[in-house]
Length: 294
Ligand code: SF4
View 1 (cartoon, rainbow, N blue to C red):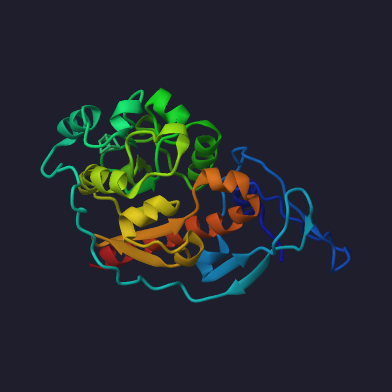
View 2: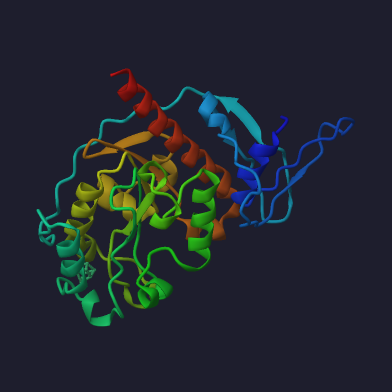
């Protein structure tokens, strides 16, 4: 497999250094992986998935040799009919709120015990009508202190991944909502000691997320991590079982993928996260093409 310069840039931003044989290389030479959160210096290529191909990486540990990526052809996954979730019993009622009212409702919320231990709520960030929406899990310590979702190393990795496909969470970067991402968490308050969210907490907070999605009206949703999946798809299946196909949430295409914090621990999964991003790109573009044809 010969990787183009642009494809390499995309792989590197995901932390994957891909071995490729020089002209006279032995056919069974190994590849190496490593962490690299640098921003690519050239615009990344669309993935093989755009050409109905998927990338599979053989299991490998960090910084050890691994086989070169194997590219296999596959049909583009069809959208999966998914039951439309409604707010869970006990959820806060944010129906009809506009952005300022919603922000105020979150900031003053005491609907669950997490309000006792938070430093501040983490509302979400990004263009109010971004075409892309990312739903994460719960604020961690850094988010609780800053009030911003996805900060720290996982936030840097997410920003680099987004930048690699021409997207940004910073509304000032571009006025084009098609290039913008709105990021929100399922929980707006940090669970103490970063414990997992409790079902009751997820259920109560869900009304805010539902309203955020209604206001943004994204073209695509990326659900990052198992708790985002639980909230949006009502599924307790592992992320690994749900990724790789298009789900739907309130009619919006939804792609399941790994949380960046998980990718920092399981670097070999970055190839699959890359695949997920490319599937999302494919899905958005396919929807745009259909709309353009009218
Ligand atoms: S986690 Fe959600 S429901 Fe609980 S207090 Fe915070 S904003 Fe309210």
